Image 1: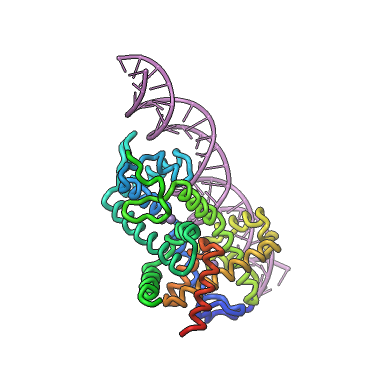
Image 2: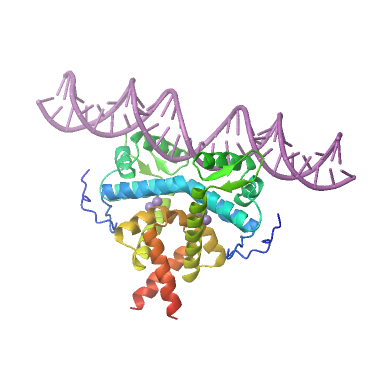
Length: 157
Length: 157
DNA sequence: TGCAGGTTGTAGCCATGGCTACATTTGCTC
DNA sequence: GAGCAAATGTAGCCATGGCTACAACCTGCA
Ligand SMILES: [Mn+2]
Ligand SMILES: [Mn+2]
Ligand SMILES: [Mn+2]
Ligand SMILES: [Mn+2]
């Protein structure tokens, strides 16, 4: 009944609860990130397939994501609708300019998250696994902190 | 056409692409985490509401998540079906033993992620925002690395 | 005691992201 | 050039997580 937490400073120590407004903002940001993570993973993967000397075919994407090819085809349709990829029936898949930009951004963020996890002593396997999910929720500010930490560690011992 | 990446060691540097099997494992783990993050956030929030001296009512949950009360009611139904909460019509919401355990685990993980982000120089606001999404994708191994880093920093300067 | 307003529940809509089953197209091989 | 295997596309199913609109229920206060 009694709400003794109106002035929550964000930290929740000892029965404390955050301020409602800030909490809403946090959850909304997380939901926003959730809506774009599939697109980010797709364009990143498509760019990787194209750049590694081949083309991006639905069947390859499906094999690497571990989903059915029907899922991939449907998702590619959405990505095309949203202007991230270009694809003609029975042809391989290409990135639009926007898609290429998003892919490049996602890729550099992905790599930085992996490097950071390795830098703090996480194993290769876990670093790659965790990065695949974490990356989509790492803001530019946190990314910058990751970068700083890597640099600091490189210059020190 | 030519696949020159069969022996990808996990790192993708210079046109390199990871081994398909490992990549599938990573994406599958991420999808698994995605399926449980809503439940984790709900039980964590319910525990916070209860422990801060009040009760957990659907309307409070809705206000703090920034979603409609109808969404909350429906989700609570799923959580009850899955054995995480107990609720009777028109009464406030309680956690089952399993729900309480999940809440406690989620809460400690959440707090550790926040503390870690603060420790590497992220601002309060961003730390809380990013943690809300990142937490669900941080494995026990990475969590341990976070913990180590905080300890190391506390003991040094 | 009654009722108004807040809370809860229900119904039904939508988009997303999964799936299987089946149909169509392509491209390689013979 | 025909045929076949693989790739692609389509249809239709399901669960989740959002929403609005409306119905039902409680409760505190007049
Ligand atoms: Mn990812
Ligand atoms: Mn990625
Ligand atoms: Mn969360
Ligand atoms: Mn949380």
